[in-house]
Length: 554
Image (cartoon, rainbow, N blue to C red; front, side):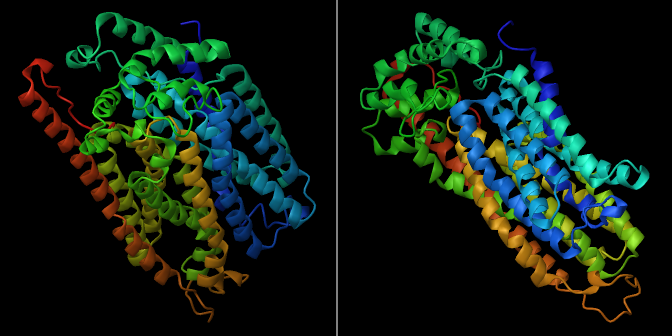
């Protein structure tokens, strides 16, 4: 339409960028027992085997914590700046790894690489708003494309094993230049401001139209469209359009007048509402209209629960039970999935059921399965659109439980270990789209970057416990130079079975989270329907009662 690059081109570049750099550090298992521990004369990094799990623990923690910093940059400076800084961090960290001479430089370089990953993924989520009829599907495709980056280190390992020129230092040097080119692409293609939520052609019902008079309706439609296409607009134009789109709301909300007036006076152009503001900029959605109606009757305390969380101030969103439940689910599941990345090589060697060659083959298969997770992420988006976030959240936990059951009871069979990798891939690949969808569908985009960053940051702090936990449960069989698959070498195989039993119990307990989310949704839907039933019987002149349908997007 002349205001931004073709949406398909943006989508394809975003997938390439996220698929080559967004989560590269999480392919660690492919090289932690080969490229990283090989001597420098053999083209490796010469890192002590017992230290590789520690470095990944630090790097994954940095990756999660950095989401808060980069989320703030996303909200205050926009997707273009956030994406460029993220790519530059990965490029600089890769260059540091390529020139590292000791363990400290190696560890620091790995942490710098991991710092940039979350910013790439967060800065492309808004592109799903350009596809209003398949928003969750595209959102899952964008967030799930990170799975492809898990195979980057697998490619490194293959090249290292088959080509003499491919050394640890040369591979990361080349990769740093490649990621720098991705930063240039972000500079040329991405907007300074995220694309706002668009409405599909058939999503405005007749009953909603009657809540506006004709003139105001046409004006708001035009202003919303201008906000969506504002990537090349001047800052003054963006602010003026935002004020204009909220002028009708301002006339009807005297109690919250100060909040609504300040929508365009926030700390930046991206956080268009300050942290204490009510309502969002998009005045066309169903949940907005319900919130608007509830705020018109602010003298009734029962109306408070009818105000959508999307229209609540920042701290009400941050301290809501909805955000807490979604975050606890995410913190525990990410710890389980990332710990498996750091420990799978050690566990396979400790369990001592396979030869060294088979162990390496299994870790390569595991990494490749993770890379195929983008397909599962696309499917998760379809399921979220079809059945809702609560059902798919339950499905995520079931996949995690199946992985634990398979490892516990059938881990001695190589084919079943491969099957457990499949369950793990579904578990991990569904996890991130579900968490993002739970935030956007229940809390909206008003403070999405900061809320996402806080969730990732707290998760990152927990992941500092991965290295001590790995040391606590590990045995000493993985230290043997030539493990005996028969298990007759007298070494200690660790506490891996006990750990998996604990993880299974925790994942079963988390099933209460989607149940409570469903109850909260039903309670709000019932309150809304009850209110409109009372209003309908009280004054038949209000017009036809509104059919609000599902409240899952409110």
